[in-house]
Length: 274
Image (tube, rainbow, N blue to C red; front, top):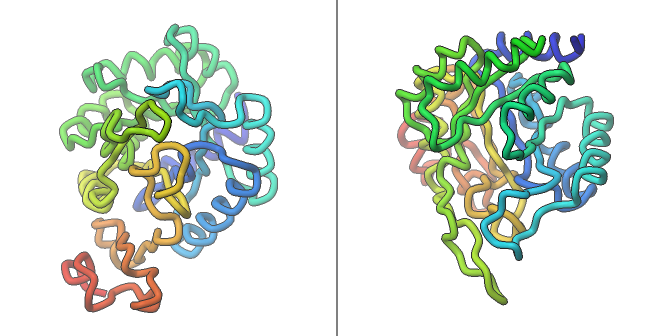
């Protein structure tokens, strides 16, 4: 068993009020990923939130063959290793494979923490079986997460007897929602609802939040409409402690309001106070 993974797993299980898996949807370049990691770590360190940096090396599950996929396995893992070494951050990435049991067993044998995504076609109750495949392969470091934010699912996912993570950005994806220049389609999304989904998830009591963020989502090559604006991830300690989690208004970071949390013209701040 990987000792560092065991220690990290214990830290994530004990995190209060939750831990955060965050980063850009896909690796665009080494420079961009390092910039994102530095910024996100700066925010979460101030708030005392455990962070696992996330980005994909290959988006093999794209709807269109013209969609951006990333640098690939070899180069992508080198970049993620540099993020880990440069900023002393644990990292997580995703893999896709049709033979799910073989994939789970192979992943389990690495000794790393395995975060299993519930398929949209699966009932929450079956995730206990998926988690058990990891444990039977000799790895107790398993988590489950859902990208359909239904509060009932989070309760049922607890039957897997492991940390439960809410994916608050993919939950708002609109498949094939945009046409690409030159042909093909790309995913659309409802970015404006991310704060609502975040509050819902934390209020239910999930253990972790998964969210994809970007410094310029309008120009992101992949899943821009469901990535939160990196520069605007302002998290209020008071809001977190009150369990309502995220103060995530774009208005906070605009020059017009001076980047002040709790601005008078911010709708979410009118709700919970500065």
